[in-house]
Amino acid sequence: MNWSRPLRVHLSVLVVALLLLTATPIIWMAFSQGRQAAILAGEKHMREMSLRLIEGYRNALEGGHEAVALASTVPQLAVAPPGDLQPKVQFFLEVLRSVSNATSVYAGYPDGSYLLNTGRDYVRQSLAAPAGTAFAVRLLAQGKDGGIVSTLRFLDGQARQIGERPFERTNFDPRQSPWYQTALRTGGPVSVGPYVTGTLKVPTLALAAPLKGQEGIVVGTNIHLQTISRLLDARQISPRARSYVVGSDGELVAHSDPALMSTILGAWSGGGGAGMRSLDPSLDVVAGLRKDPAYQTGGLAEADFAGERYLVQMAPVSVSGLFKGSSVAIVVPLQDLVAQANRLLVRNLMIAAGVLVAGVVGSLMLSRVISRKLYHLADEARRIGDLNFAGTDAPHSWITEINTLGGALSASRRAIVQFALYVPREVVRRIIDPEGGAAVRGRRQEVTALFTDVRDFTTISEQHSPEEVVDILSAYFEMLNTVAEEYHGTVIQYLGDSIFVIWNAPVADPQHIENGCHCALAMKAAVDRLNETNRRSGRPELFTRFGVHTGPAVVGSFGAIARQQYTAMGDTINVASRLEGLNKEFNTSILVSGAVHSAVADLFDFRAMGMVHVKGRSGGIDLWELVGSNAR
Image (cartoon, rainbow, N blue to C red; front, side, top):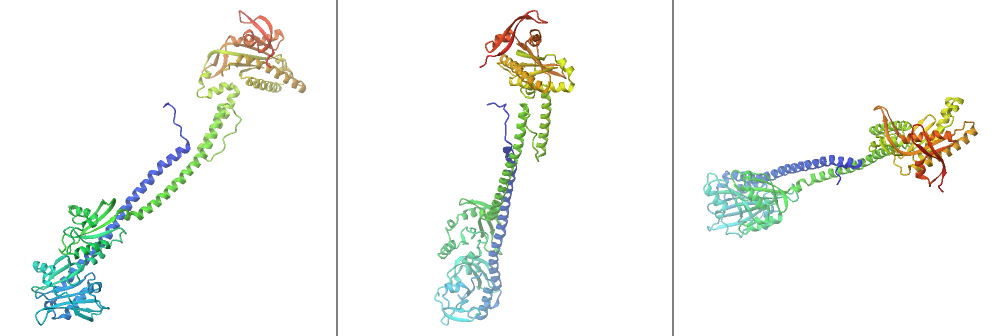
């Protein structure tokens, strides 16, 4: 591989690459930062909604605790039922109305008496209540025979009794209930559960406390696990969000998913909730977080399970020292939290990509416009390098730099045009060619030289004005120059009324002798035609003599450092000049040397002139007149 070769890149590729290199990192940074901002916003939203949900659950427990605390101070509850029954019922009904999440309010007595008020859906679901029932009152009281009488009364929304019947579940003893025994044992407020109530036969959480100043009387309130499940509804955070309560033993107490909650209710109704951790794979993650000291007081964590990234919000739910070790956990797929933001980001990314594509298209169009101008300038530069001045100046562009370049190129064109008027075109071409510098250094080589001269031109100059002489010579030289270029000759000098032409320099020409002879014959024919025109127009006739010789010469630039001239020097050049002068003695037009005759004798017609001596040479020259061409 040639590593020295410079890398060439199209302008359009460069512009597009720069645009992509600039825009792509910016778009990616904006997308990354936007996604991170979306995640942070999602986490903030998750935290706010989670805390609101947790606070709602805590408030439900707090309301139940406050109701129990209030009931434990009500004096009417100190008398076992059926004493003061109506005030007791009215108080319990007010508690149910005030504590919206309470399932029932009750009181147990040391003689086995029991009073329970319950309401809402639980009455119709579990107690087969008559139509219009809003509340139910269960009463266990000592009968006249000393046994326990169990009755169930049904009340409407205004607490008016609309029905009563014996309650068949007579084996219930409040003194055997976990809430009763725990409250008496601790002597203060307690939390119990989940456990299954004796009246409604549903799993609940119980809050109970001993009646202040009374021995063996316990008041309490139940909160149905189904109610807790509704309190845990996390769909406002995300359709796939779920939340649940974990007890101190790590087992599920309640879950926001209705299907899972039905399983949980069935498990607790069957006597316990052990082994329910497999219901939700996130429970293992939550169990690990509950053991981490960093999350024992709650917090937001990220975790992977089920092949997806989740946010987990945990919070302990202890209320006034109750339900110690219980926690609420809210689990939300991270993708759900950032989905809307991601859609917005993707939309913005698509817009940015569209703008980028439009920018690329615009850049390509712009680069093509610029490239066309540059290619035009490059073509103009190549034409100038070939000394082809037939083109026009570079067209105007609205890009200042291209106009500047075009102006500089036009100036160079004009300068080289003028330069080529004074220096042979091939020399100029080699000089301006970056690889052609060797053409101007003097070196020895074989050349063919031709000299011309006009007979009696001094007399012609005397008979005509300088302006007329200039016009005559201009037409004459233009004609001869055209013929010389046609036969690949290089006009080295105009010497008064004569010209000096060489072949095989500066451009190599294997047929330089043949081309020199053809050129001499063509020039003579062209002069003859010119003379016919001059005779008709009254201008003087120009009789031209030619001398052609071939041989070695030193060709290159000669002169001072500041001013040089491209020419050829040596005996070959001198002999060619002397041959041109000999035409005067022999009354001929084209004389060539023996060297020329020997090289192309079979191509042209020659007439032998014999050996002659020329000034400045010790030996003679075999002289021949070039008469015509043998070409058919």
